[in-house]
Image (cartoon, rainbow, N blue to C red; front, top):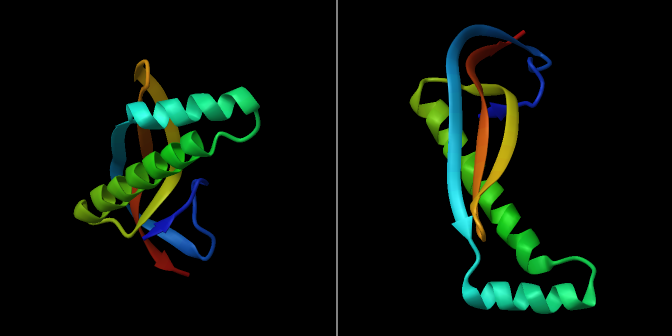
Length: 106
């Protein structure tokens, strides 16, 4: 699956728009993870506990996006973006979205 944040893919032409696709996940850190993150924040610097959570959530949302596009018959996604919202304290929704298309090499 080709994925691009731009509205085209160099060396390819779009032959069909399939439509909007998305991948969503909702994640939270465990009580132990929040405790460890709190300890890290006391000392400042990079909060690796939360970086790992963010990376995992984005990777999961991205994979759901690709799966959704593939199921819809696309071979590429253009205009891909991420969005994140806190649903409630400690619980975050991560959304990956874009336009599923069929492309051919030029």
